[in-house]
Amino acid sequence: MRLREEPKPGDLIEISRIGSSHWALYVGDGYVIHLAPPGEDSEAGAPTGLGVVKRELLLEVVGNFLYQVNNHLDHLYKPRPIKQMLSSGNEMFGMEMEDSVLSRNSEHLVTDLRYGKAYSRQLIKVW
Image (cartoon, rainbow, N blue to C red; front, side, top):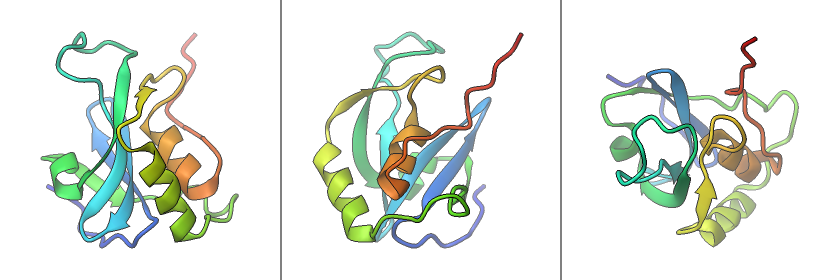
């Protein structure tokens, strides 16, 4: 099942997954840029690993999960022009990046592309 909000180029897409969210930047024509999670060779459930920046169809990235447009930092930061977002994203295709809930993840990538600021709400301290 999916939320049927139609994204516009430059929108942040939040994909609700069990225990966390995965983030992507909508680029148009059904495609997104995102940090694909570590491959099947990594340990299942491992908290860290290397993901790869990819351009893929939104519906393939979402699979059977829910998604929504969530430009959650628009009230704090002005989005960069779409051409800058796409240019920055294109330069990163194929790059391996850390994918860790503790330091850097897909939300950091897409907020950096949209706002020029890497940000994540997913790190929650548990004492």
